[in-house]
Image 1 (cartoon, rainbow, N blue to C red):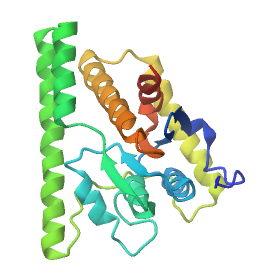
Image 2: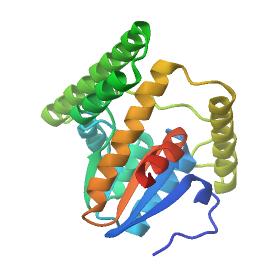
Image 3: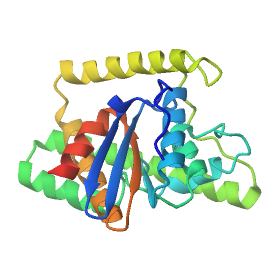
Image 4: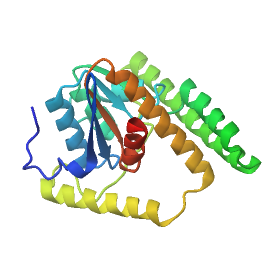
Length: 237
């Protein structure tokens, strides 16, 4: 079942459908925590009824967003488009982003191959340590939520100039403006090498995990708008 094309938040510019032998991988690009993105993710997960939903989250962090998704509100109050996808899913949900063992193997392989300067490697490793610490904190937060029944808010939602109460057109226009600004900045400046190493490896890992998941049927994957083309390109390479 295809979602209604009358809703401007269901924007094909932010969706990539990648066919495979066993089904389709639908990549859904998002502006994190934006109401239009939350609506698009929820709608596509519900209407496409995939065999798996894949999220730009570390497997370590996923349980916290699963706790957010247990909210009685629709969409959940916390967790943005990620918890909205979990709440809408009637299938397995997996985290496909770093940190993970696969990411670390690929990162060190890329470092050996590209031989960046020591300072670059040090900055990459500091960044990996930081995101690993955050992912572990999310896992601890999920455990606390499970033991106490109280939700732990670790990530303050990004504030936007519109909410779900605004008209769909207003939401779509604001999202388009923010996405355009973000992508323009990416294209205007050369990506620092540490960020390139990290993000290129992340996109390679996410695409590889999506190939594995697609062997069992249709997949809907939720990624940041700035990773949409990168993951798509890696998947089809």
